[in-house]
Image (cartoon, rainbow, N blue to C red; front, side, top):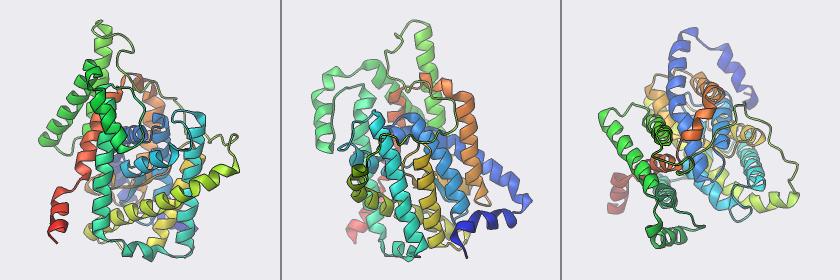
Length: 380
C-alpha cells in the first residue's frame, strides 16, 4: 500500500460510533498536552509557543500518517534535552538563530525518518534492547532534574554540562529567591498530592493554574512586585505560523546533520517502543514502516510551522488508551483542542511562573527513572 495515503484509509473506514470516544480521549489528552508542550519547550530553552505549535502539528500529522491507534506524537522530555545539547553549541538560546535551527533540525530529523520508512527499514527498531531504552530514559531524567534546579530556585547563571550546572547550583545556593522556590516546591507538593488522590487528574495543568492564580493574587494584594518572579509571559494568540528561514545558511545543515541522525534514531525507538507496548494491550497489528513515515512527516511539518523535533510520548499515549480512544482521530482531536485553547487562553500564560514548570518537570524526571527495572537488569 502507498504509505502516503494512510489518512484516506482512516476516513474511508471510520465508524461514526467511534466519534464520541475519540473526542473524549482527545480532550483528555489535550489537557495534559498543553502544559507538557510548554514545559518541554522550557527544557530545550525554546519559547513556550514553540512547544505548543509542535504539540498541535505533530499530534495531527503523526496520527493521520501513523499506524498506531493510540500513539500520541508531540514534544517529549528526552528529545527536548537532546535538542538543547545539540543546538546550544551552535546558537545562543533565546535568539532568532536558535529558533531557526530548531525548526531546521526538525525538518532534517523528519527527512531521515521518512526515508527510513520509505525504504522499509522499520524492522531496525526490533534490534534495540529494552535495557538501552531504560538506561537512556533514566539518564535523561537525571539531566532534566539537574537542569531544572536553577529555575526552581530562581538562580541566574550560564551553564551547559551536567557537572557545570550542578556546581553552579551549589555555589549560588545563598542567592536562592525565596518566593520562587516556595512556588516551585508548592507545585511539586500539589502534584504529588493530586497523584495520590487520583492519578487520572490532570495534575500538571491544575498545578500550573494554581501557581498562576497565586502569582496574580500576590501581585494584586501587593505581596509581590510585578516581575518579582519569572513568568512565561503572554503567548501569541495565533495558529502556528510558517517558520522564517530567511537567515538560514547551508553550513548549518552540515553542523546539524550528526545530531539529526541521533535524534531521528532515538525518536523512532522511543515512538515504536511505546506503540508496541500499547499494541500489546489493544491487540492492534502495527506497521513499523508506516509509523516511520508518520513520525517523519510530523517532524517535517513541525519544523515548517514554528515547532521543533517531536516523538511519541508514553504518558500521553497511555492516557489516550485509558481514556477509550478507538482510532487515530483521537490524537488529531487532541491537537485541535490545544489549538482552540491557545486561541482562547493565550493571555493567561502571563501569570504562569517558570518555577511551576520546573516543579512539573522535576516530578516528570523522577518518573522517568524506572528503579524497579534498573534493579532487575542490574541483578541480571
